[in-house]
Length: 143
Image 1 (cartoon, rainbow, N blue to C red):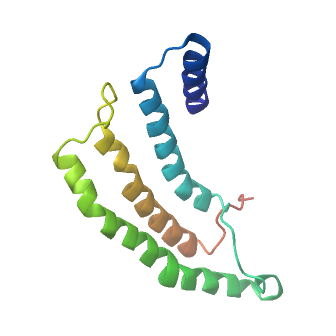
Image 2: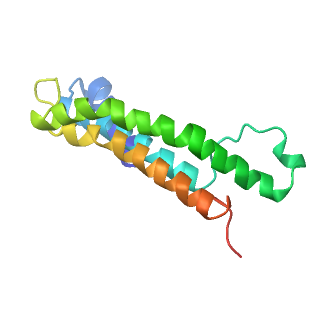
């Protein structure tokens, strides 16, 4: 709701009143980036990810656990681990210079927003491990 209200305010101010605030546009962009990055581990936790497995419906229940373990080891951990590793130097530099908006009058603290990406990647890895240890029942309500 916060993001929608901010974007609505930006549009109304710009096109309705002919005025704009760079800091408000930055806030909308920062909020979108953080919400998007942090929604990935939540989606995985709730079982909202897409399972591309056409044979799982015909396989015994134990198959799904082994398929999830295989996907965790071969795909999830390496891909998201690589994302953290590759992004780390840029993030360190951003924190070192206390990176802010490139726009004059924009918001400070871009370095904090950039931290959401590796945090999200780490949370996805942790959630993937938790889902496999839990038996592959992620997203299913408990009775």
